Length: 297
Image (cartoon, rainbow, N blue to C red; front, side, top):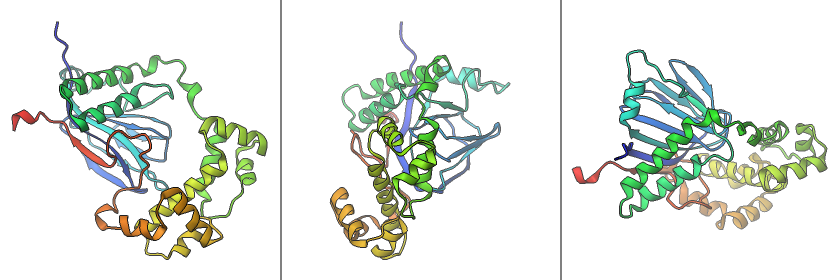
């Protein structure tokens, strides 16, 4: 018995600048968009507004007007896939506009297979080994099965970050331009400094000092690309009291000086993209991969 597979059209792993807006549009095929982290991004359609404040998937049907207002404070990464699927056409494109049990916005548990399946799809579409189209379609079918089974996962709430950690991360982001201390960040969480540090490492994987430094440097990257300010001004804007310390830490963690970074990435062609880390990427980031059947051309 042959298996009816979805047909991949295009997919990518994209990070957009803070405050970006994708205006009202409609599409001719289906789209799944996976957001690996929660943010202040808002998805809108005729059924309402959805705050994408936790990791999850947005599902859009053909012909549905929709728009995105991306997080105004930080860049937003998302993995998307456009596809066609006969079974979905029969289910979602009826006169009654029924979506069945499929939601516009679905929260994804920390242990979900969806992120790794999407990344494997991107790798296959990028490398294009023998049989890549069928492999990609099978992986997409698995993504759709996992996504549609989300409501059956009773354990998903246990994988969310504790509220104090979320408060602390938000406090960091809101005060990057100030010389805040770990004690102040711990205070924002409501935990003691010692307990906060221990729990932060447990849930985030790195000490709060390192997380704060990394967020400062990421903000500096954006300013280096987008703002016509001196290195000294940018250092102060992201909470460094000493320009020379900022320069040392930037060179140590990025491998280039702040001036070299600006010279390399400040081209207007790149200003609409946000800098991303590629520590676990098997495919180029900020790239669109076309997956239409090339044999038809």
